[in-house]
Length: 198
Image 1 (cartoon, rainbow, N blue to C red):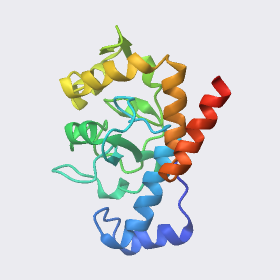
Image 2: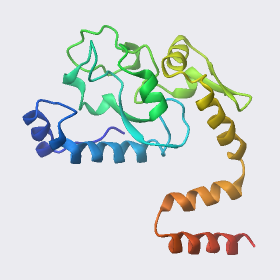
Image 3: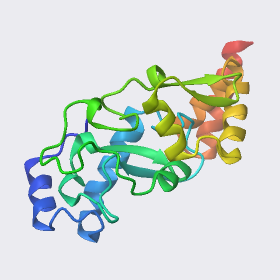
Image 4: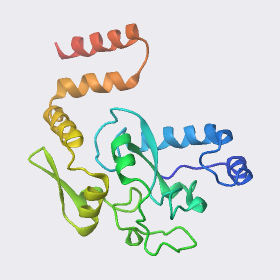
């Protein structure tokens, strides 16, 4: 579900020229980041791994670079969240077809890579042997290549994640950790979890 921006927020964005880097728009950018982090179940839109470092707002159509599109920088369908690795590797590549579109597309057909809002990720990319990403389509291949999903930094994380994916104990503790709170509150939640199990 795309983020919903209020009229006031849209007016602020317009006031500052849709400039993503404007410090006056930090509150709105934080809202966007929080929304997509929750919507994506705390998983990167490209590697589908839990965030291990910073959570970065991803612009499917880049906002900067030689062919950046500032006009799409706050468009809800252009936004998602990615890990630092994937966002950094994808960079400001042109993945919109054709680049000169004046309105934001309403279909994944206009993109060379898997689009977080329009495409079903696993229709284009599969995970084989719990250790590597394999393309099922040209779009999947482009996404793997663009985000360097074959780099060891990603594949090592994938192996670790997949090792614990089916372990209910690990998954329970991870869910408790996601709830947040002070150390004492988390300890109490873990104790309740273990009391439930035993």
